[in-house]
Length: 231
Image 1 (tube, rainbow, N blue to C red):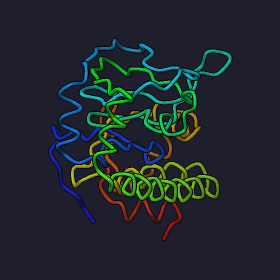
Image 2: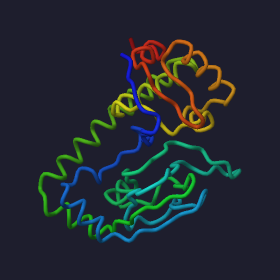
Image 3: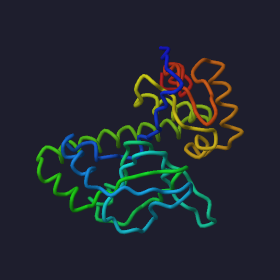
Image 4: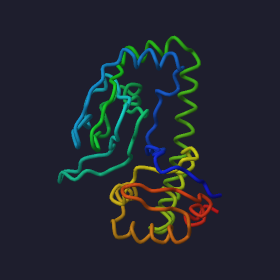
């Protein structure tokens, strides 16, 4: 199915492997927390969170893109997911009462609001249905993650790229223009830029995607599904 869109409607990328639970709060509770949350600005490549940090709260992104991943011993950053406006991250460590498992780095200028752990827990306590929603959200995201990992592990490099784009496209609204360049897609799939470029050329020829500068337009999810081997 062909999806038309305006190129000025850019949808921030959020991977299904990054559970975000802040959205399960009621609208009024979210608004109250955000109104009281301090706003902080970060510069390009500034570290916002490090592995091993104690979880005393979490961030809600107001503008910009945040890279979630891990720094290797040699200093190279291994990208796992990109988050955008409206996304939150860091809630899971609060529930697990465990140190942060990943690093978070600003990908360009970023503004984000800090939600204090105590304030978040009070908001959850005021709505008994919230915990049920969060468990349901985590269950769905876990199943989606397992499905994605299965597709990534079973197919060729081209199928892995198609599967990644397909899973992203399924969670986006009708405007499927995402902030994703070849470098980021390569990091998300563990493939080289040369391999990614070759695969994207093939997908573009098939009418599944259209490439723009540091952006990808997802046009036909059915073609992506065929190339991913899920049909």
